[in-house]
Length: 229
Length: 165
Image (tube, rainbow over all chains, first blue to last red; front, side, top):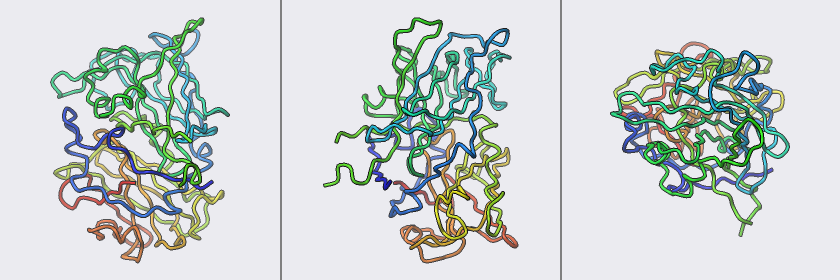
């Protein structure tokens, strides 16, 4: 299928150097990014990625005497392209900190407890409707070192692949009603309120022991024929 | 037909799980072609090396074909505490209208969006290399037989050219 990629919209995508997020000024290029002609290299992509990145850990909450501490949640995340077509078989990587705001990563120096029953990394493959479901616990908030009081709101990191190389999407999912969302330098690097809103999951009614959050990810790319003049 | 707006990209953060970062930097295993090694160092402003930067590559097979079912052409590596990464792969062939090249995608804390760049093997005629001002910075340095060095400077002196698509 031929795929078309349109330039990023500066209102709905961050622009690089962001006030309030000091590292961006050390790492985002100082020179303007160059526009290049797109061809087969950029508009193709790995079709059988699940063979190289096999699924791991479909459940982060645990069972029996190996249960992680925290509010039980179920994440239902659907991956679509810009045409609204689901992406069955796409690989989704999910990682987040524990209920106390501590990551499993050795570089995390935050003075918060480690949960021996929580391992915060899962890789899943989307089903026929582009859906992944993950049972886990709600992540906590944590302070960002050396920033004079910036606290990250609870969030879930997501990494997904779309139809082609340029469809790659790495983003974060936030929880509704969190007061820290209002001041978060990462969420608020997105200028358009609607685009920010779409990064916040939706709480849906649940009759089980888990809170259910639904979320949608839209990867770049649409059929080359769709909507062409 | 109405269009959905792509989800806002956000930084990978500093804590991308090690187990995800490792184990996908050898594309040569089981592939036919000339095995090459690509190594390099990723630095920020002032040349400071960066730990746990995620680099993903996408390249053609030895015949210049993308997404050959027998050779996926996709790989991922992470930098170590000294900022160094390493890929083992096969030398890509020339796809129609293109010089042999390896596409790089960079994800990291402090990068609100992915960065894209391209490594070339020499100063070849290529439509993507043609639009870049500092072409030298996209040409890998040969270090012995089948070994290439491709350093990536995110910002500052000798800054690597990056693409926006």
